Image (cartoon, rainbow, N blue to C red):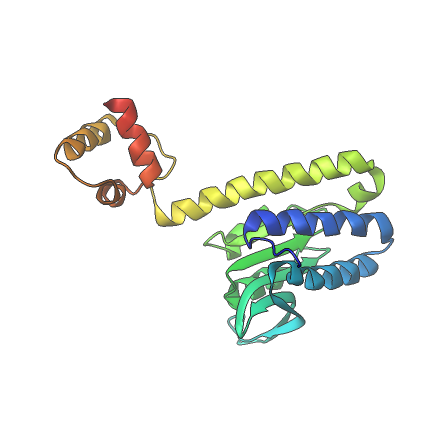
Length: 218
């Protein structure tokens, strides 16, 4: 019986990074690498019990109502669950197409050498796009162990920053320092019997953060 992987950002990033390294090992041109990544990422959907489609049409992805094509999408029935764009250069339209796809998970595989952060942040306001970035030049010069280590470090760093932004979307004060006034209010509310969920809403912090602060103060 075929094993089905749990669908989450971490598992997708790990699986796609494995594909990227195989591509760096065997592909000699940017065009060959793009074709390889598109084909392998499309096939990868089976590990997550999803169906895939290449060159998926996304409509009205920009202000002039232009249509475009997303390199790979994974779907469950008629619902687009994961979307991938693959680029060797900075392409604002790739980010716009991902955001417009309304998929639950968005990934931009970018193997150019120019910094991408400013462009990404100007378009992906909600911080939903996962970036898997590597340099084609680096792939040719690094030893295998170094390349794998670098890719794991990039994936880990991105997962942390992505999770940070995602939590902040729901809890505006997540990860911020507690003030003395907040501590006083927290103690009072806890003594009055206010629930953890209610305090999380009040302070705009996660329930875990509320419990941890109460434990430290009491």
